[in-house]
Image (tube, rainbow, N blue to C red; front, side, top):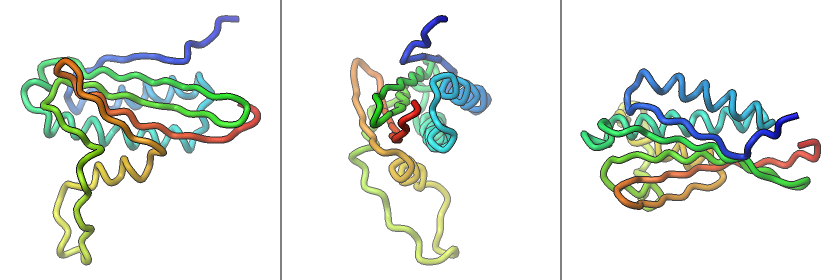
Length: 149
């Protein structure tokens, strides 16, 4: 029996057409590593928001280079974690340092945009950012307890 590696990588283009295949890759990779469905959903929603931000705000540098994705799953008998790192070549942007804006009080006050980072923060158990050699690396993680893992 071949052991499944803890980490797996994928490179995609920073285009809307590659978001769905990236979600499919994430789901299959998580399932192969026994990540529970609720945690896969959380990771997928975060991934979709992160990719939407790269596509919308990364500019020409992000659009010209591959977006690299890495899934890493780890754990022991008590606690497990799945992390996704999104690495892009857009301008440096530390999503962990941006304060989310006020939520609108009414639907009439709502404006498009601005909720993606709030959603990533709310859905993930941890969020980190690193900028190295012209690349943004945003990592979001989910955790779960499962003695049968």
